[in-house]
Image (tube, rainbow, N blue to C red; front, side, top):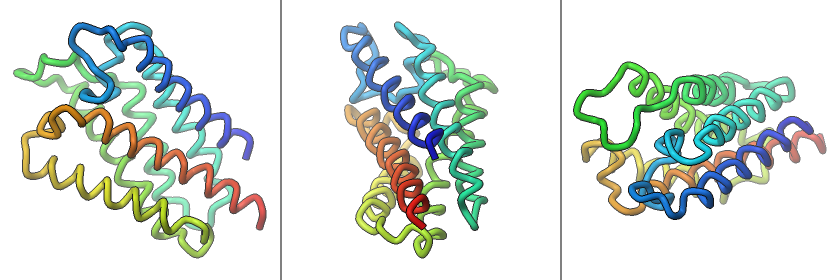
Length: 183
């Protein structure tokens, strides 16, 4: 289980660092812009670290689960999103294949953990509040995404919503690891 904890800690530290190092960025703001855009900013390599460290945490949890599919999809989605960076913010008139692949990987990951939490509710019983919060945020983001024209319709809080969802999903991995370690 140590790899779960190390992966989550590394992911969260990288997110915090990349955000702090870019507080003075002339265009990108952590609360307003998705973390993936920061791959092209100062210390952008930390974005790759934060995504891939989350994948390591997910894959480290797999051997301890009876129902693995959704957590495996989470990890695989993160690997895709981490290895295939999005194009720089503002260059959306002609989306690249890499941006589309990155987006598919990211959305697969974000959708997979609430599914995993629901499917594993009997194995990881101490989670109801966290799962409810993740599901509400996911539904809110998904609704805006479907009704709007992408995450920019969230306005000045798109990055904050994404970061809260990421923290909640990584938190579920830690909660699952702690619960399963006791059994």
